[in-house]
Image 1 (cartoon, protein in one colour):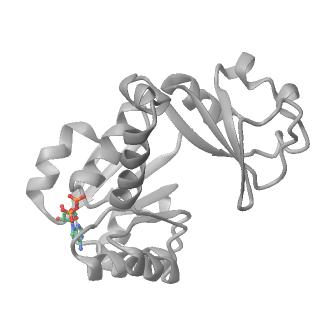
Image 2: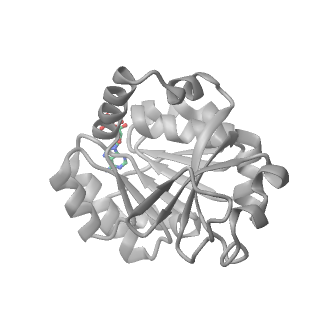
Length: 217
Ligand code: ADP
């Protein structure tokens, strides 16, 4: 069964994450305390629910623990974002991804239990700056609607094999552009590169192929 996502906070960032996952055929629940936001997004998600996520009971009613990944995309209300992450963690949610407004907010989110913190504005700023100074492939990839770059944690059946043996290009039509191993980043890895436990493969491909790859391997 494919992964189920819950997105809390259907502002610009949250709704964009939700819609993209939904377009990739994942099951997505959108949650926002603001009914208007729910109505704006209702046709772009599988389910949309109005709830205040700083209320543990509301989260329990939604069955938030059953989701594989919960994205906390509450922006301006930092207190609500922190409290939501804290409650999700206490409830035993498997994977919590949270959006931070700034570094300090990010630090607190990690402390209260976020598994991953994203800084969309900072990261996009870095990316735009790079794009401005390099004639680039990434811009081109962004323009190609059906293509994405994805990060995939090496599955157990990849460990100990090299890229040649894995033959991902032939099997899934995806290309490995980098391997993250601990804090080392191996860009343009050689075919003899052996995958180790915990490695993250950065792959590029058509969205459909990426999805098949992520689900099967
Ligand atoms: P963005 O910059 O991505 O647009 P916003 O801060 O504008 O971010 O949007 C965050 C969304 O989170 C808003 O739609 C807001 O209604 C929602 N939100 C804020 N606090 C809560 C909460 N306690 N429970 C549920 N949703 C919330």
